[in-house]
Picture 1 (tube, protein in one colour):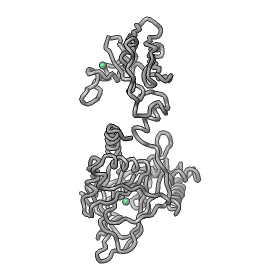
Picture 2 (tube, rainbow, N blue to C red; picture 1 turned 120 degrees about the vertical axis):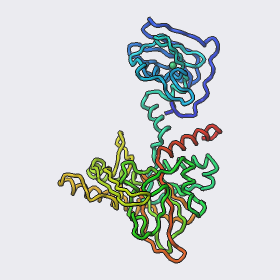
Picture 3 (cartoon, rainbow, N blue to C red; picture 1 turned 180 degrees about the horizontal axis):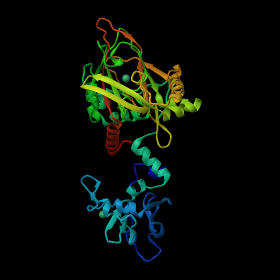
Picture 4 (tube, rainbow, N blue to C red; picture 1 turned 180 degrees about the vertical axis):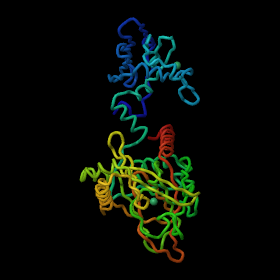
Length: 426
Ligand SMILES: [Fe+2]
Ligand SMILES: [Zn+2]
């Protein structure tokens, strides 16, 4: 893992006597080096022509292999890369996917390649090292980019907290908030002004809120002729929001503006942790919920009129079989169930097994929201619910909600990480 852990130490400049070494085509391998190099600097680079691979030997003795085609495709020169956008402008039709290399050299701590058409590419060692194709390096880069390592929790979770005003004004506080949101899946943001509009301010700290049929933001309170079970005073069983969409919102904010006279406690469960328990205790049920596509439906009128339908698996897994998204809301699970009749009963048994696990008291974190609290959580992972409540004079429960998508949240997290690291932080 040490290979790709940022920040990268600055490369040490090579002494002048080591600056140039060129090997021309005609040999079986083309090589440059060895040089005296810093641990992350390049000691030697050679072309393995038969395999069309460039082998880079690092100062610490490690080696990395880079396919010629990939190197040519990613030439950083101004002819091949639009510098202002850091975007490729070399069209694929001009890429020879069987290209050879004319010469390779290491100079000024850069790896230079001369291609058969005499085009030259210069690669920065740090850039190359981060893109090493070894499985350990790719895993490290995956984690650096997507932060998919999660911390699972249960009812004993001490929900991480953040301060609303600090998040708005301080990059480090905003970064810490988003890192906890990603890793733990839930953060209580405290100290928001007790007026509407705060979930929008928090969304705009990241980018923008996601518009849905319930509006840019939405008001959770007891409404006559409610178009959603959330807009009543009844209990809400554990659910994720909006599985009726094929791409449900990734993140949810709920700002408490006013509490009920009685009841209304909030519930949260780590759906990934519960799924892991299901996989261990009842693999057949896990297989059913990760393979059966369930119909969800949501029909009504709010931002405009709508008739939403989806087919989602209750438990989504990624290409490595790891749980990646929970899609479950009992209220919007459709009566249409597109299964052969013999699979209906096994599906119900599997669903019940998962719901029973998520409802175990040892899995359910219970908290009470006070005016000014904003709960921010991963809607792809955390199932949430509430106990029923009774309003009273001057005690009318009212939450304002907003959705965001993970792409936008992760974008802000990466930008903040860059700026915090740039100012000397971790
Ligand atoms: Fe909800
Ligand atoms: Zn180029």
